[in-house]
Length: 159
Image 1 (cartoon, rainbow, N blue to C red):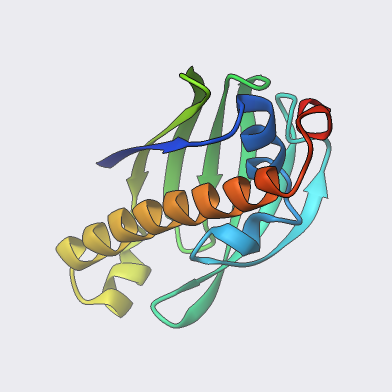
Image 2: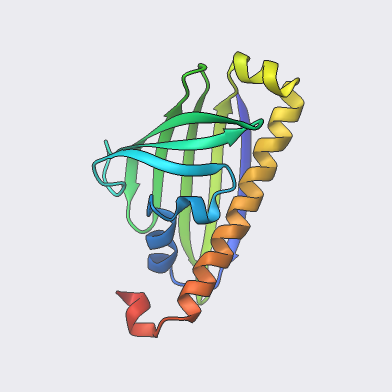
């Protein structure tokens, strides 16, 4: 199993970061591999909620089904994923107060499916691509949240 961990500071309160990060309709705005989200079943704020992301991996669409395992809004969630090719992942994302903002830490363990490895040529390439995508997605989330938060009044952000 491979592992990647990345952390980013976002200049917005945890509730604002959570609201955008957990909204399936907004995932394609910031997640570099997500083309669309479909088959949302239940809330993503409770264990058992499920959704499928259509990702573009190695230039090809791939459905990845995620299921929420643990959640404590707006502090953290844990989700597991499977792919039709046999890949799997376990991801924990923490949203911790950090000064006037939020420290988001993404911690993911994953196995790349053998069929996908054949398309990507090597496990090392796949690992670098996944790490790069997580870093870029975190930076994109930061940009989307900060832009959204700056255009709202403090009472709107608190909800």
